[in-house]
Amino acid sequence: MRVGSVLILLLSGILVTQRVSCQANAAVREARSILDSRIENNWRLALEMSNKVMNRTSGINETNYPLMWKTLIAPRMKDWKQVGGRFTQTYGPHQTVAHTYLRSSEGLVVKCGVAPFATEQGMRNSALSHLWYAWFLEFTKANPSLQHHKNASLLSQLAGIRKDRAFLEKIGIKGIADLREPERLRSWGELERRSEIWLAGGNPGD
Image 1 (cartoon, rainbow, N blue to C red):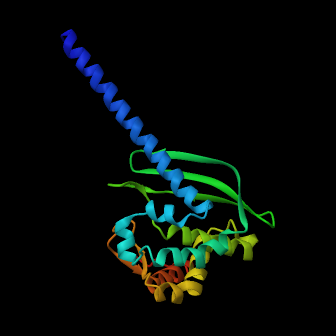
Image 2 (image 1 turned 120 degrees about the vertical axis):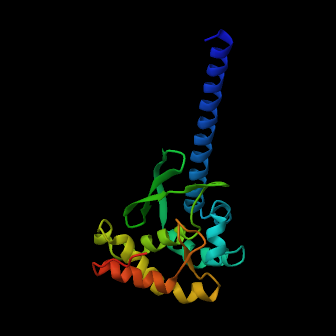
Image 3 (image 1 turned 90 degrees about the horizontal axis):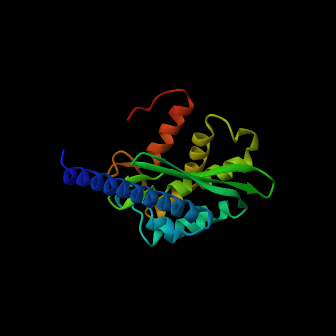
């Protein structure tokens, strides 16, 4: 192999490595931004860093999202403060997670994490993931002994849907889009039924 060919291969390898490194750095920054939006009570950043296709499917827009955030998310988050640093982990080119920890005034400590997926716009997550987390915080404060229960996420989701469904539907947020099929809507009623089936030990299927 000629020297010129070797140099071209080396330069190509360097450029590919640099491109992958830049993409990974961008993914980490974006995941941290999504985490920041939650713990800093920044609905604008949360909306900016969310999946736009999923938003359209759910009926989320710049009018009803801040209303939802200020009514349903901010009040549930206000008693929790960040403790410790912020950590990130990249899982290949398709997902980067970021997390930190929050402490309540009662001394409860919980993990606060986001797990966005790669899209054409960069790392993005569901705009409603912050509402899911707010439901979990409320459930944890009301049931501290169940914080680490295997069904804590499902229990908090079911309680949250039952409590907030009427308000969400009133402002035009119809449900949550499927992560695998962002144009497929799962209504609040469907999510409630699926949660009930899972908690009963069944399998709701697709």
